[in-house]
Length: 252
Image (cartoon, rainbow, N blue to C red; front, side, top):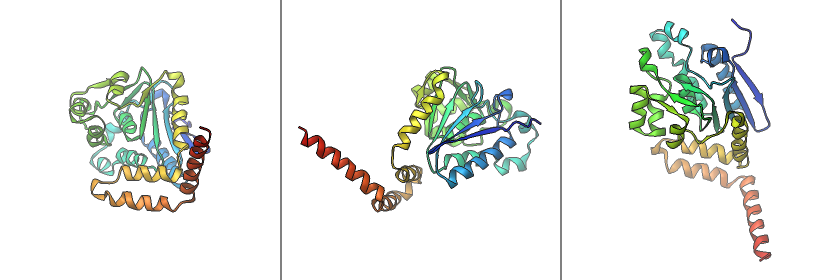
């Protein structure tokens, strides 16, 4: 075993960068990386920060570790090793940004689908080849992908092995943006800057309300708004807005 950590964590004031750090195996997601991601999630839950996820080298994540998958049995599947960590990432309090260079396949694609935003490069490739290996995409793609791109395209990817190019993924909004590899991390930080400029609690509650079950609306919207209406930040931001508008009108 290598003594090298499978996940590198770079802390910032209002954000954190997670680097998948197994470039020698195209950042294949193994159990050690899953454990490291759980530890990183715990920190991002305790101190809510925007999360940027990037792969070390020229691959985001080429999938789960096939050598480990081959040895897993029924009880391992029922533990939901990968599905639980991807769902936890999806539920993090602040937005997550996947920065996808190169391959994001299988479990790597499912990790990307769990993010709130995805930015790619011209060499990004997204797909789920699991059925070709005698298994299925069981860590979120089976239901999350249809929500992202619609049923017909999701079935092409999941049942017929279609792999999307960056241009194709951008055209169906699976990628929010495509930039050159050297600009990928900087572009992610620019998006994080835009998110960080919003009121943090409002952003957290907006994300939670967005993902609430349909039957929870409109009650959950009203309760979240009631919380925000009582905050000092709401009053300060609205006062600043009105002051700016009044100054503009006074200068006409």
